[in-house]
Length: 239
Image (cartoon, rainbow, N blue to C red):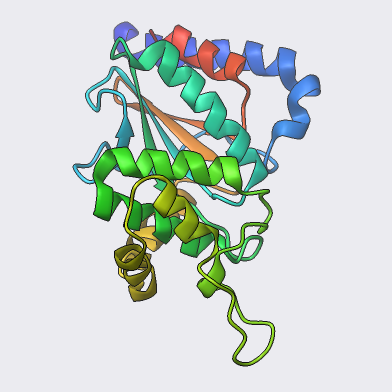
């Protein structure tokens, strides 16, 4: 019993102390108001065979992030997670799983961008997925600012908008434009995006990024774009 409780208790205590000390200086980094209870409403899936994983999928700690590519807080947290993987991923202690949580009410372009990430994975594998995702976050001004070209609503009937930045990014990471655009037009990955989104909502996600740390059978939510120091503190407590 004591062994079972020690890890989650340590994580909660460490997280509370770190979060309290950093709250006022980092409160602008939160994507949304935190949920009423710091718990997972419904448990999410563990690491799946078709997940996008950076690091060892069998790592002691897995952080599953549900993200919206047009969310400025997600853009910031994307950098934080790369820092985490650089420190903890190379030795196999931590893995990062990326899942989708586009919020079309705020960012109408985000669902199609999420499909673009899946098309990159389909055409180029895991390496292309992460390269495409990194470049998209580096390119977009966020808040629905990316030019997604032929997937934009035309301003006037018959107006052409060109290939747009989704295709430009695909070319830049080594993908062929024609099969990439064919994949995007098909909408074949929309169901996967919706599945991830539904899972995030069921687990208590109220905004993006919404992350859940899987450790020793426990699922601990990480709300909003927590800074590196907070995420590191939670990981160190668990390890």
